[in-house]
Image 1 (cartoon, rainbow, N blue to C red):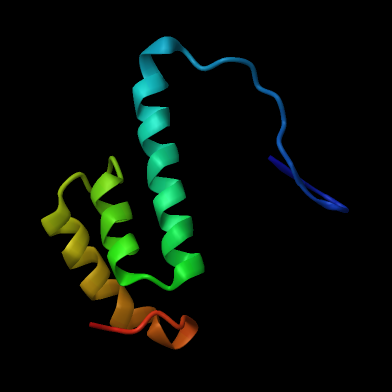
Image 2 (cartoon, rainbow, N blue to C red):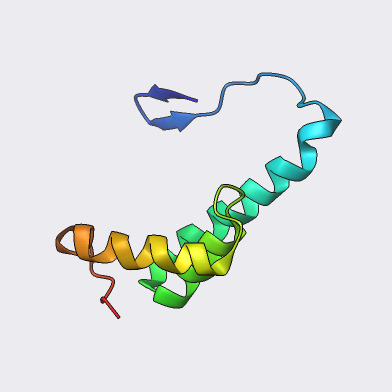
Length: 82
């Protein structure tokens, strides 16, 4: 993607190899959940998103990431700490 005067415009790069398709779909699903968490200020949606993140992979790890993240960055967001 590159920045343009009227926003961001995707740059065509061709097709991804079929071998990476499952990973790309998993990342896309994670991104959708994380956007929902941000828009709704939802702790539960953030937990679900992190569990779907291929770099996190397990809800227990996602819970730990979230519990570390919220106190560190809560002054920059309106998501309530739990």
